[in-house]
Image (cartoon, rainbow, N blue to C red; front, side, top):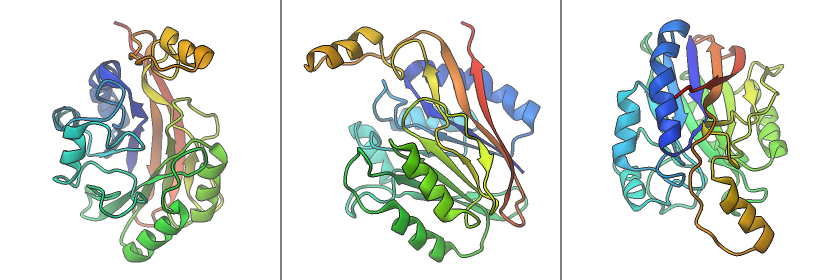
Length: 260
């Protein structure tokens, strides 16, 4: 089977890139499943129920999140009402939503999707390694498993992939918005890319207009960021896997410009 993971969708430009490229990718690649990270899809921070619905209508089966999943009040409320939008599962109990989702497969089986968040240079939330172990013990061998590991440090994402090698189908790193050149299948059959990149404008600083980010770094005072509009791209990764064994067969990073 073939799966497309769409990297962090950044604001309206990111949504435009998905709308433009996804139908063609589904047809050309004969995709069975599409998953995307949506935590920046509403103005660069958070998401809304309306935006989630629009992305589902484009053919995305399930949406994942990260540290900005709770930033928009509408999106945070929607997390409690849907099982198709995930947020990191290792946030403390009592937060709305879940980081565990199930996608029906075309052959009648099921796929587990797990959303986790790292702790290096991020919030000191529950351990993603122990959370993954618990969820996998509950899942057993019911079918393939996909992990969105939303983390700052490549080392933490790679360490989780090594820890889970042979137990999950693929780990897609998210959060840094900079696509890494390490797409590979590990010895145990788990595919890894430590950051799938960003679907949105690459002309600024990780999706935001340059001047506001530079001001923050130079003067250490707050300026409200604005989503950039230049060099829009759809980034992510294509995964081919054996749905019987749950093992990855190949993984390939994608980077498609949007000509407006």
